Length: 147
Image (cartoon, rainbow, N blue to C red; front, side, top):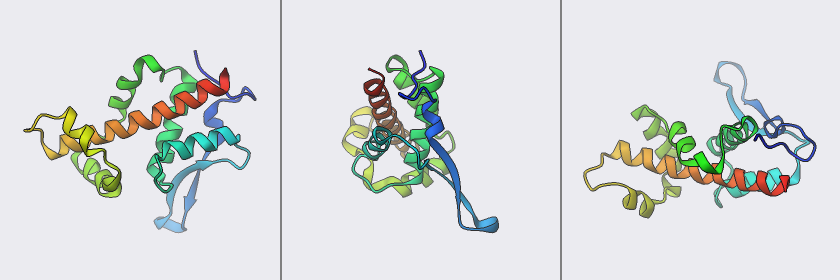
């Protein structure tokens, strides 16, 4: 069953997409609306896992709450959800890894990968771990506020 915030608005309605910069060099990014509930800001902060705010994590928080709103993300399908969000292109995986290298849980990646696993596939596993953690954090926060 989809989860809504206490105001019965979809959770995703508390996010918006803005532009940083001007003209053709402008970059879109996701952020919380000014009217967001405090608990949602706390959840997004927790989803960053102690890292400084970054656009990718904000986008994954939005994707997670969209999944929660639609019922496509639940505790029962968290792994499938995370697997479906991992970049499929090698170049995208390497770009992600270059931005998130310091936060990759290498011990967990080693635990989940065979020694012969390619670096691109290891990055995919690292991204899976990160997405799973973000989605799990957003699920827990939504469940708590709905209770």
